[in-house]
Image (cartoon, rainbow, N blue to C red; front, side):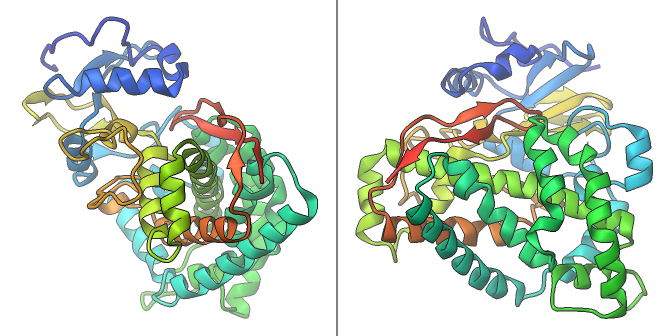
Length: 399
């Protein structure tokens, strides 16, 4: 049984879905008040009646990420309880697994991310970013998300997998239509399986220089991904990976538009500052704002006793405003150093998508500001709520 902690400030109920629909500024102010209080923040999930805890400080979120044996990620931990028939037919993704299955699958998948992958990705990213900016100049669209932010990570993923872009369009469209990331990631798996099954069989017979070939190739123990595991992993990359990068790209343009001094600093030296700008966009824009975990064993965290079965909310967005870690945390500063943000998680569940995501952000910022230095957002991001944070649906822009 969990201990009693002081009530959250008046008007702050993390268990009320209405809280998560508040404007981002209002939620940020509420989390700032919560960080003034000691330990995890207790609340009750109105949908389930379960006792839950929000980890709102950087140290607590980091500690939970490094203790996967205590904070479980299995089905039901990352969002709504998935349909069992879908999971049975189409498998679990890395996001849904705990050890030893997570470690086994992560080891198999990790083999595919060889040292030469980043170089290959960066070359493809630069070419794709240049092509998309060519199209911007030619067609002059008005929605940055559709024209650029969604297209770049999608096309880079298809290139990594060795698939023509049209092969995954149906699944990608389903993901974009569903605001709930957990539901979308689950329900698009049948479409992803249809898209990758034939290429997987072909790559086993005739391997190519692509990610699918590396994923299905047997390791020294004779293990490679089967079609079920491959579809689940590709679904995760397509949904959470592409969508998170899309959101970071859109939020990055909005942040630079809203902070003209930082934009001018970046424009003044596009060799020195893109890396710092990317890390600060990831901190301030936090593509995945929160994830759920389930407590496996009774234990104490920051002086508070958490009981086995309690649900825990890892609040990355709040951790990124932790005053004890980030001086002037509400300031967008592309020279911030160090910048120990948690945008890609931590511990054994550190996001494999970090490797392709960072080059995409760097390349697109550099390409846009070099060729279209007047580019700017004309609206705030149009967002929809989801289980992992507000998703960017569209962003007006001009140049």
